[in-house]
Amino acid sequence: MSRLIVLSNRVKLPCHDPMAGGLAVALHNLLLCSSGIWMGWDGIILDTKGGKDSTNNSDLEFANNDFNSTYSKSPANTTDQTADSKITYLTTALTTSQYQQFYCGFANNVLWPLLHERADLISQAPQDYSGYQAVNLLFARQLKQVVQPDDVLWVHDYHFLSVAYHCRQLGMRNRIGFFLHIPFAPQAYWQQLKQSAELIKHLAHYDVLGVQTYRDKANSSLVFAHYLKDYLISDDYRQEKGAIDYKVINRLKNSQPQAVTTQANSAKTSRSAPLSLLLTIDSKSAAPHLLAINAYPIGVNVAKIQQQVSHLLSQTPCHSSNPIQKNNAIKSAAQQIIAVDRIDYSKGLLKRFSAYQSFLQQYPLYQNQLKLLQIACPSRLSLPVYQRLYDEVRQTVNEVNQQFIPSACAADSFIANDLKADAVEASHVETNHTGNPWQPITYNESVLSHAALMTVFSQSDVGWVNSLKDGMNLVAKEYIAAQNPDNPGVLLLSRYAGAAEQMRAAVIIDPQQPKSIIDGLRTALTMPLAERKTRYQLLLQGLQQDDLHSWQQRFLEDLYGQKQPIMRSQRFATEPLTDLPPLSYKHT
Image (cartoon, rainbow, N blue to C red):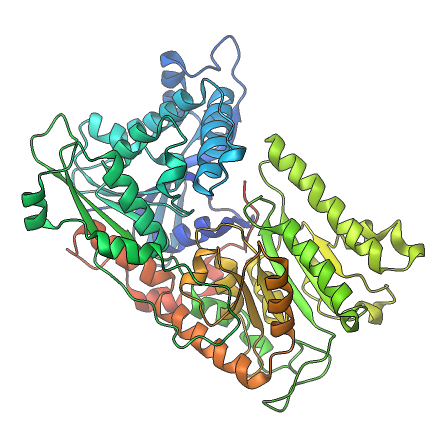
């Protein structure tokens, strides 16, 4: 019987620790609903000595053996039994050099900034690319050890662009799909990287390539057509089997939402058939290879989030200090904004703090009333660019707070912001009630359980996503899913987040334009109840249409060739919350 084998950079092994990131949550949900194998890195870095910590052939053999020998250090043979489903975990450690060259080096110092259109931040050491390819080959060899002829493989994210190529070189003919969770950059950015031609050819060895948005689909189709023009079958054959429709690509490419605050007309998103490329890329086979490219926007488990906050619906609405009763009523200035981000230059944190500071200056009515709760998760601090950003974020928060709070409290303003995780759940309660002075930004780096985070979302008047570039941003979707239908909050959403392509009933802003942010924030804070309800219903309809199950089902149907249903939607929607360990958004 065919098995689903999932490969991702990090694997969340069964334990009681919080689950790391939206990707881990999505894959855990996927594999719970079907017997499958989850393979990847266990987070362990082996401090090799005696000259073995280099990415050469001997090191490859050493790391390859580690796949079998480190089960005692991380429970790689552990199976997670949940009801009638089972997950088998297969993990491996990385050597120090592999971690530095593959993860820190090419993946996060080259591919991450490239795909987020920050070519100015690309930093590549001489051995980084060879280290990246070595680890991709390592995991291809490990897949070869466990794969059976009928198994289907689903590879995730920018860490593994070349895995399918190495699998084909090892003789594997299984169906292999790839999903990119971050943006797919336009051709101009790929042309700034000397390894792009080889990487795109490696990507072409997948059978299905999934991206988050239709703009990403357009970008990837044009990039593939450019770099693979010598491998495309003749035009006549492509016209017969499915040629690239460049009119469709250009239309998709220009579909970026504009910065508007008017109500959207529809929550629905159109779906299109995959764009197909017929290629002669496999030197070991005379048969042409068909690559399907399509957008599969990832969603959230709406039913589960609503279940997590259902106990709050019977309580008095607490988005603001005064309950809202009339549809045309405007909220008071005493409101709470929630923002949840990894500390990354793609998230627009510094631009958020600057615009928020300007907003309070422009609208002094909100001083001593409005609160911004910023949950910020440090990550990749071993990379200098992230350490610098981390320091700058903390310094900026402190400076904004010092500007607006009494001078007697300024020296301790940042210390007061470091809340414990159990305090955040009640953070909507006004600080004046506890005797603490008002401060504009409450800054928190604690790891919250998923249930606690959904509670904070439900109790916040505005959810603020300020991304400068984002593949999707599930925080935006989770915020809406957690809202009280009778008194919903407002989503303030960056036009540069992939979610903006679907969630057009949000208040769309341009984080590159301070005035756009300030105007959008003012719109969100003064929006009447009737309009908030209308926007919420449109957004919720979209979330329910394109939820997490829909994302999984659509991709796997294309990957399996629509031979069989992959999951049972009934179980997915009603799975008890106790089946899952606590979840959070902290990841590396």
